[in-house]
Amino acid sequence: MSEVLTAPLVVEFPFTRSLGPVQSAFLTGLRERTVLGVTASDGRVVVPPTEYDPVTAEEIRELVEVGTGGTVTTWAWNPSPRRGQPLTTPFAWVLVRLDGADTALLHALDAPGPDAVRTGMRVRVRWAAERIGAITDIACFEPDDGAADEGRPAAHSGAFADAVTGITTPTRLDYTYSPGRTQTRYLQALTDHRIVGERCPSCRKVYVPPRGACPTCGVATDTQVEVGPRGTVTTFCIVNIKAKNLDIEVPYVYAHIALDGADLALHARIGGIPYDRVRMGLRVEPVWTDGSRFPDHYRPTGEPDADYDSYKELI
Image (cartoon, rainbow, N blue to C red; front, side):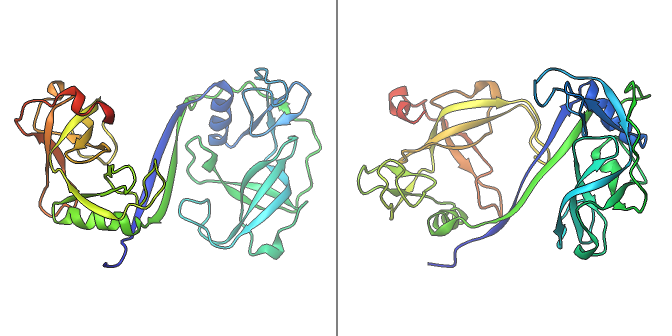
């Protein structure tokens, strides 16, 4: 067998959420170089502020302004910053208790090396040159020789002009995926426009894509079986929201398809037919584009619909 395949993969989900009055005030305040906390039921000042008391779970909204200097309570050195982290040079992750606060804020500390960082050291906020109302408006913390501000935090209304009402959090995972020997054979067959599965020697079911073992019997599945390429739509959904970086016009249909000879339905897009005419039992076949390893979509074959009893176990 040829070498097992590997490929770089990215899982990305930019999560968008609306903000309540407390989080809105906190992030808008950062844009205006102001750090706000919230007073909990026991009198502690929580920074970053929460919308609910961490002890009683009651709603809390009493905002106060705290200082932009603080004390490091604990830290860890990061010698190799990754893409998207606050600094591109080695830095320390620190928990900083800002003056007037009773809890610590996690952020980056710009320091020349780990020997320059210690618990109890004084630091201050370094503001970003351009601020948009996000935690990144604090570019990082930097060492500070100033003394702690012993004054009480000042009450704050939380009112700002043009308040930030929502944020988008970019979530991304980069990793290298290796499908293993079984799925490597499956992917290599797709290059030749063939679809292969593997049969369980015990229950005799054919799994596509193959997994190397039967999920029911727990035994190895080393017998290859060519299936399809035609199949039957078992279930489907109509997609009405356009995905980022996916050049497919909505609405479109995504379906589970039981390939002829397979005992497990795989999923694929249905094309070549209006979305509102796709149905359970529709007979379909794959459509490959030039240079593509995977079918671009499945289209109707023109055959009569499959009888429900022939695919009901695969729904």
